[in-house]
Image (cartoon, rainbow, N blue to C red; front, top):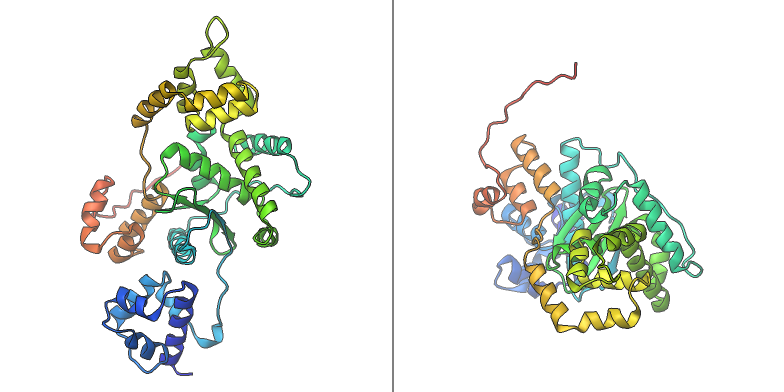
Length: 380
């Protein structure tokens, strides 16, 4: 097999993984006919450098992946665990792993050790474990990770800077998220860019449960067992609630807010949600599960028009989410200013055209052309 035939074979393999037709690939590249794709894949067409770069971008892979020698053989991508898999999961998953690979590349270039501290690890038998045990697990993890009384406030920075978790944020359908962990990429979480900040906190805590209980063999088996899959997702929800809203802290804060008659107002519940940086609905469900509120009272609050209006107004003042991990922006910019990656690579990581790089950096409070001044330091 000559080089052109091998390259065509690789392109066909990657296209098939994403379930993209030859017609669709031709359209995305800017070719007039699928015949050009067909002749390329059978090795009878020369491919220009710019065409190869475009193809790699469409197929969500590095050019090096397409240029591998035949002796290297195909590589199995890291396993990805989905929560509510979207219809275009194959394509989104490929982009998730490609972005995670870019993230890992930046860490290697900057010699950042992303595995200084390992995530907690918990084992359990899914057919035997009870929800009460999951809440205890959440307490242990919060203590081990030193997340404090209000974990949502420090969760992202702790996971990124201490445990090396990579966050990739993309437009997804409602409720979708994914997790992956491998020796090559480390722990990675795919978040929905359309989720507001406090919903992302819950998604992160939910996906953290899957990372600390990672069992690839179990997850693959769960794909064929809907009942156990649903139980595993319920356990992840319990873990998220227990991690982000600790029982003892919630009781203590309720004591501070309750009236002389021992009751809470709608304003108090919304204030609690903001204090713990979760949604008001999540706060009410947690209070219901802990029997701070009766089930009937909690359900009535959720449909009360006054509470809904109050919550909507409060949410307008809360922060918006970013479409990129703050840490990824920070270290990618550092790699760029250190001359370790090109402007084109930085543009790719930031998901913007090269022509818009300067404007995008300025929006992040960064400068495109900056001298890399070296400042000597000592610890004496």
